[in-house]
Structure formats: structure tokens, C-alpha cells
Length: 101
Image 1 (tube, one colour):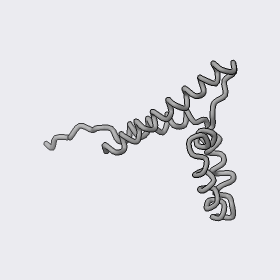
Image 2 (cartoon, rainbow, N blue to C red):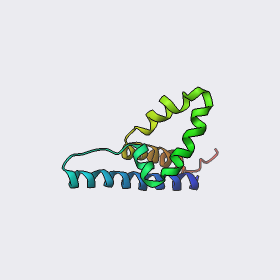
Image 3 (cartoon, helix red, strand yellow):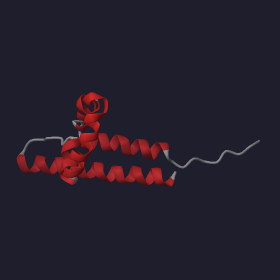
Image 4 (cartoon, one colour):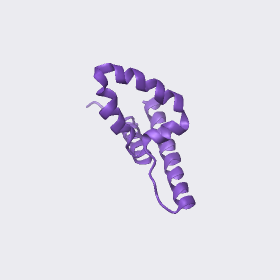
């Protein structure tokens, strides 16, 4: 339970970092561009994205990489991470103990 909440808060921090990166781009260039998960991942660790691509392409004749994983990587990072973070925080929330009658 605690580990799930911690993961949720870490994801929320990453969502805030992605949103602030998007807003900095708006301030810097004058137009808004929401970074995709793939772009965000590429900025953080470019080698791991390439490493994960090869096994996914070999499994299932490539359908697991393209279109499934590519579509997921094209989702907006800030929104996707925020939704996932709130889902983790909600699912792993503290629950009151029920009293037996």
C-alpha cells in the first residue's frame, strides 16, 4: 500500500516536471507544444528506449511495437503521467478498518 502511494507521488512529480517543461517551451517560443511520453523518455534516458524497442519488435511480428507502443509513446506526457499518478494514489489510498458487528 505504501509503495503504491510512493509510486503515485513520484509519477505526480514527473507529471509536474513534464508540465513545467511544456510551459517553459510556451514562455520561450511563444507557442504551446505538449511533449509526448516518447520525447520525455528520450530526454531522460535515450539508450533505454532503443533497448526496449528491439525485443518488442521481435515479439509478435512487430505489432507490439508498432502501432501499440508507438501510440502509447505519442500520448502527452504531463496528462498521461498525472492520470496514472492519481490512479495509483487513489487505488493505494489508506482505508479505514471496518469494524465487525
